[in-house]
Length: 346
Ligand code: FES
Image 1 (cartoon, protein in one colour):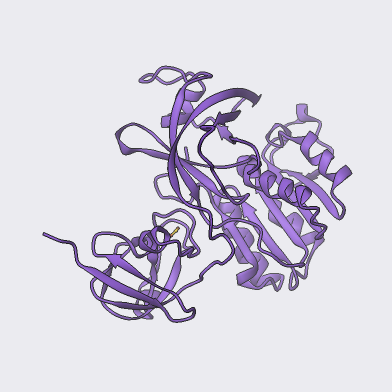
Image 2 (cartoon, protein in one colour):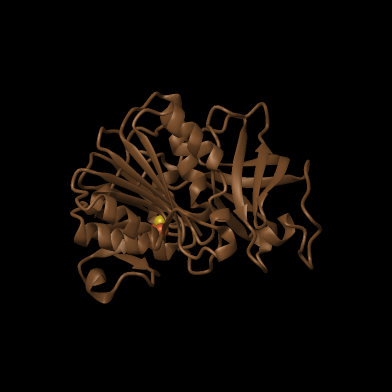
């Protein structure tokens, strides 16, 4: 039996694409090179929320409330078409030649940079180009169709992918990486893995607004990639990085931050620790990360914010920045990398 195919018109742009009845609207758009805003692809982050103006569809998301659904709002990563559709969606331009693909890679180095964070570099095949926008992520493809998503910390010009991976006890991939898995051998240099990417639409938008970069823990990884891109392109937009952790050891790349202060005009760095122990002898800022930003920049009307890290931090920042500090909702970009309900980035 052949699968039915329908047409989707994006009414706020000139674009249209076909969707098969057995694929999500988001997958169909990406497959045909139309970059709609998205993050997790599994109904966890809300980035792909769009309005369906007409047509029949089926959606499996649990994130939107009944009021939103009755207004025709839907998460395109959880929506399949049952007729032609007219939708209103955020279409991103300017990343046309970036294709999502599946590729092999070889672990070329593993460096423990704190007691629970590993910096992993993976070599890519020399005959295949892997283009990505700084800020995007990849899915490592594991046994039994399982995936684990990690943001890319590296530079698109290198023929390798750098990941910052925190050890999560019981984590399918991170247990093997840290050599404590009961079911799998420890991963080691030269092991071959496969991944799919690049994924997500978390990357620096063009413009000259000052930017606030907000990272908690290993949410620093895509932010590192974005700031290095600014350095490479001599981008002098005012940028302030707020990096938070529970303990000082969670702010694990001070050297990078000091290099940016020295070499990137208009760059500032603020570190914030929430649960320092007395033995840490922490003299710097304390408390909630996003409160530190609100304290320093009470009016964010003309800013853009790029946030990555624990969902609670990202969600609180978005809520408070937009309701208390005048940040336009469209100027908040996030990659809440544990937003998937199954924590599938562990
Ligand atoms: S991409 Fe659809 S909810 Fe995250």
